[in-house]
Length: 425
Ligand SMILES: *Cc1c(COP(=O)(O)O)cnc(C)c1O
Image (cartoon, rainbow, N blue to C red; front, side):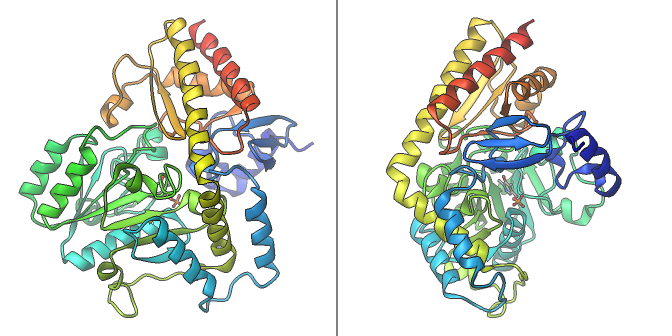
């Protein structure tokens, strides 16, 4: 019989650790998916789950959103990859630029990692400077420029600098604390060779950590004053916090922006964009090289166009509903935990939240690391038993989708109640 257990044993023999991205593993073995639809996933063992991982935020509209699927099907009939330009690529970039006006020009890529890699190379090419500054716990993908004190799976496993990454590269990545503007100011005063500061405007890869008041504004100010570029990594926040991303939400104009995840609502597409002057540095006109066989492939591009059009059409319903649903979960879970006298913090904004088991506010990597991981593990396991799937790590975020119904939310609250009771006992 095919079970998750037997599939995992088989997978381990042929796929390192049995999974294709480290965050997908949790002990003793993860469930293997059979199918998904709307707010639900089904595994091969006959269980179903309400999905609150939502592909790490990518599925803003839920699994198999009908319009997107139907547009993609139409495109598939016309060919899947040309490696020659198409009109739909222009259309997608125009839509991106209309929604995020700071992205005057965009290059389409396939993953968030490619987008941040290109953003950083562009910043170095444009400023002729070498170093970059990132914040502790921010995750910008799995490449050497940014795998230093990264969040997400790297924080979960406890990898500060990945083995195999080159010291000459990682020592040019300076790391400062999130929400610590003084430290950033000090580093920028000392270091004259900083090409860019890259930041997740809302830190969604260390659990969820919100920018304190004026933190982002001050980063904008300091980067401008020091002739460094500001890169907003909106791979999570783009189209999730608003159709204009976190930059619209907070009213800040970065020099370069990266998008991914919700841009394709389940199809692999990402983008790097910003001021024309900067983006024009890209080859062949410029000398900053970037290329990809699958970049701008018509399937992902049609998914991107369909996603943005759907999100734009639904905008006045979509974002208020997500925010209302998120608040409902957060306040119910918070009340339950308080009633049971479980020390906790819940950070939340728009359609994202995370609970930390600690007495202290969670504002950065250090404070997030102090929360009780064993308790979080228990929470995850009990939620799973009660048909609620969240990302299996304290250093990830719970993501809502448009597909969650009121009934789904009520089920989720009672699953959290059971999980918190288990923790208490
Ligand atoms: C997921 C993520 C990335 C990397 O995107 P991939 O598509 O997984 O390469 C980059 N930045 C942020 C903020 C992310 O959450």
